[in-house]
Length: 194
Image 1 (cartoon, helix red, strand yellow):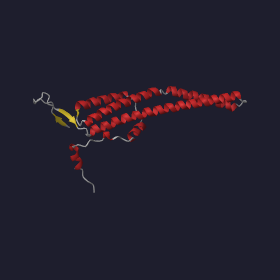
Image 2 (image 1 turned 30 degrees about the vertical axis):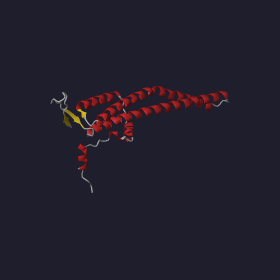
Image 3 (image 1 turned 45 degrees about the vertical axis):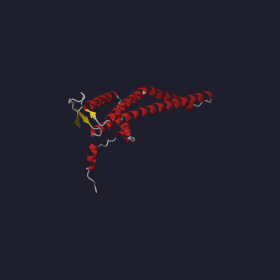
Image 4 (image 1 turned 60 degrees about the vertical axis):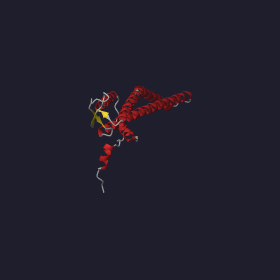
């Protein structure tokens, strides 16, 4: 953290001390990692909900087709009680899966996860841009923290499994600490193990 001065009047000594943070500070990097987890976690959650929605729809259609086929065969062919029981059971299963499909409200779940992923992605890009500038003011960190809190409160929760999957995804190099002259000296002074 350092204080920098701005000369606002073109030559006078009017200065304004503003506390700034380097882009490679541990707290800023941890924030970026947490925001990345939210971004990728909500992308994975939307993808999983979409996949579950499609699989349940496919199962519903297949069971309904089998129930209809069993019903037609039992009506058109010789009387077989087991076929009528099978047709009735398949029809009940089709109705149950259709009810599950309708009650799951997957479209809303998918939309909320996609919205949260988009908001986390925007916040992630804002923080990455601030890191690239190598100077982040207290005011800017406060704005990012307030936006992050708003997104967290509005976003649906993520399961532990989804969070772990997002954390295990390969990371792009954009969030790694930025090497600079201020940190190079510290890195070169680390003791070497023999």
